[in-house]
Each structure stands twice: as structure tokens, then as C-alpha cells.
Length: 469
Image: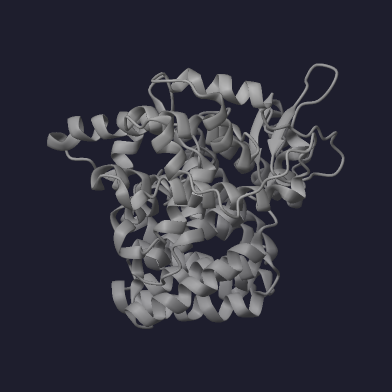
């Protein structure tokens, strides 16, 4: 297995990687990681650099001139290839290229081992050399636009179709766009593999240095990423959303302006952190506190969007054990939703359920019961009796009945919820196993141990690992 360009979050997935004797994992990175064997990559030798240069530059040969151009950056592979392609594509002679290549102040050591702590200095020299020799300002506007748009997404390979989607290329402009994209490949600015394209990370830095990102330039793109990062719990698998979330994280590295759109993206990314990466609640909290402040300023305190931000932040506070903070936010959010939607709206039922969960954590079971009874009544009116949302409400209320010792009521609700869940998801779905486990718990409270055992055995057989027998 090869993991290319690992970042500091590599530690989050490291324990999940396969290992010996059946697997070897190769990690390329500009960072050091403890507990792994490090091998440092050398730059090209002079002869290898010349060979690579002439592979892409075919007009003439002059080893002394080429060596003078490439030596200041230690025969760095990317620079060698880029200089050759740019010179070839622009019809430059080696003398003209040499005159362009201003290497004053550029000096990279060509020691046999390039330690990682020198990487930043090396990249700085490379960027300065490329900036002097091939200023982006001299490039045609259409090509510059493509480079700028690609510069704030992760340096990965993307299909032409995906790039067109991100850049919102209209049908009548697609042919010209493809021509410009492949022109950038010929010039060395973009790598191509099959029909996939990638902007090298060093070139991204060069572009961002010449064109610092501003919100207005990327607004359409940010709106698209925000939509892609939205999670609908009723139908979305958050794992499938990870590529979109990574795009969103990258966007917020560069776009610092707080407004309605970036606040929505911030909210969606926070959901990613507290739902997918368990334990990253502190990151989610910081994101959501920022988003809530932005929403309060942009929408006003009683706007529905503010209530959503309050609910999201309250969920993180709850997971951090800060129940009083969560309760305060959710009480305000519920009041706002009641005023905006009316007591029978599904959004109000969600707010009631969220607040009830916190009341339950605080031991205020009667308050939780009252809210959940109202939420279930609303869901029964708004959805069909066997809708998954109704089953969730039944399970939530049953949990409170169980805490209050009203086991028969809890049993009746959970039996209905299980029947509904079986019909909606099928007997081997993880949600069914959870319903079976919940109902088995109530059977135990009622002394019906045989029924409890039978349910738990079925749940365990589904292979979800969600139950204790």
C-alpha cells in the first residue's frame, strides 16, 4: 500500500492500516513520523537532470547552459521538467531561457541526504526561482483562471469532468476549457494521468503567492463545496462524504472571510468532525462557535439558520459533557423554531428531541418525557406511522420511559419501532440490531429474559458488533 504526501492527520488512520507479514506500507511525506523507518530521497544527479530536460526540450542541446539553469535549485525534478516544458512550449532557445532564469540569491544544497527540516527552505528557493523565471502574470487569462481555481483544492488527480463541475464550465465553453487545460499540461504546470489532472503542491503555493485567495473569486466554488458537505442523516453515509469534506477543509485554510456561505460550510465541516472522527469535538466546537457568531451577525438571533447552528454546537457541548451549555442553546433554539415554524412542524420535533436528550443526560426525565411525547405526536402527524423518523422518536421516548420505570410503555414503543425498522431496512441492517438490543434491555427490566436472549442472539448474528449478549 502506498500513501502519498501524508500530512499530520496521518496519525488518525495509522492504527487502521494493515501490517506485516501480508502488507508493507510505503508513506511519502514532507514530515517526520515516529515509529517508522525513514528513507530520504536525493535530488537528481547532473547527468540525470540533463537527460530529463532533453526528454521534454528537443530544439537544441547545450549542456553548459542547461546546467547553469538547473544547478541553483539542486537539479530538483519538478524544476527540471517545468523549465524544459515551458521552454519547448514557448519556443524559447536555451540562451533565451538562460536570460530569463534569474537565479540570484537561489542556492540549494545538493547533499546526498536532504533532511526533512530543510524542505521549507528548499521549497522557498524553488518558488522564488520559478516566480522570477515564469511569472504567472504573463500567462493568458483563461489559463491563469484554471490555475487559480485549482490552487485551493487538495493536490490530487481529478477527472476533467470533476474539474469542469468545480469550475462550473458551461457547455459552450467546454471545448475551449479542455484546450486550455491540456495546454497547461504541455507547459508543465499540470500533470496528466489518463484523463485525470493534478496541480503539483509546489506550483499551488506559487500561484497562491502571486494571487492570494479572496472570497469573491471563489464564491461559486465555495457554494458547491458547501452543498457537497451537507449531511442528511436519513439517507447519507458520512464515509462517502469524506472527499467532499477534505475539499471543504482545504477551502477554509485559505478563505477566512466570515459570511452566510462560509458559515454554512463551517457548520457542515463541524458535523464531519464530531460524527466521523470521534474525539475531534474540540475542533468541531471551535468551528461551530465561529459559525454561530457569524450567523448571529448575518441573520439575526431568531433566524432559523441561527437555530441550526445553536443545535449543532449544543450537540458538541453534549458530547463534551457540558450539558448546561447544551441545554441553554437548545432551549433558545426550540423557542426560535416554535416562533418560526409552529408547534407541529418537523423541525420543531427535531429541536424537542435534541433538548430532551440533554434533559435526560441531566436527569430531568419528566421534562424529557414531555418533549418527546410532543415530538412523537408531531412525527406521527407529519410522517407515515412506519416512517424511520417515527421509529427514532419512539425509541427516544421509550428510553425515557425506561428511566422512569414505565417499562410496559417502553416495551410497546420499542416493539412498534422494531417492526417498522425491519420493514424499512431489512433484518441484517445495523439499525435493526440497535432496535433489537434496545427492546431486549426492556425485556430484561420486565424479567422476560428468554425474549431478551433471543433478540440479542439475533442481533449478534447480524455481525454488527453493536450488542452485548
